[in-house]
Length: 224
Ligand SMILES: [Zn+2]
Ligand SMILES: [Zn+2]
Image 1 (cartoon, protein in one colour):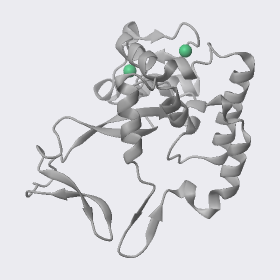
Image 2 (cartoon, rainbow, N blue to C red; image 1 turned 45 degrees about the vertical axis):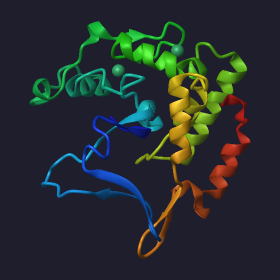
Image 3 (cartoon, rainbow, N blue to C red; image 1 turned 180 degrees about the horizontal axis):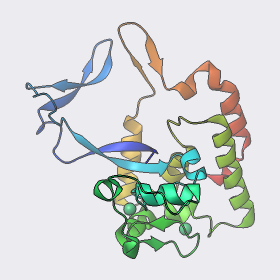
Image 4 (tube, rainbow, N blue to C red; image 1 turned 60 degrees about the vertical axis):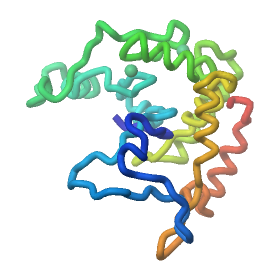
């Protein structure tokens, strides 16, 4: 499932994994290996601090849990639904993926779906109240819709991020432990780094995107 997000470390710490984060002169912040690693060894695992389905992915009606982004149907179910051909038989589909509709729940206000009640609860605690379209008044819903459409028309597939991640971040309760952790982590984000040959920046900061950013600014930010 295609997703956009901001990651945070989970599982063992960097130090326990034999890694450290250090500033390297001329290169910026870097992850340094403190011991030899075997081929295919996992260095570290990150879980998303905030994530969101890609906008075109959602527009094309790929069903995913609104919180953890797990697919809500098997590949075969998806192929049958999207093609309107109920007889499609995908080989190995049952071995590769499963769906458990009995655990799925919906937001009672906007009807987005979750794979489970715990996912619904996490979304409610972390951000969903601020982006639930069922709870917005008509004007705000229209602005939110305009923001998403403007973004979609700026970022055709293959997508790399989604502005809804930002909307979700702004919706996190700042006084909650999660909100405080999120904003601390966001302060660590860097938008540029350097390599031996050239300087990279987030592509949204490149001159090519100046017009697109201007268009986005014209969508009233009250929606966020
Ligand atoms: Zn889920
Ligand atoms: Zn909702």
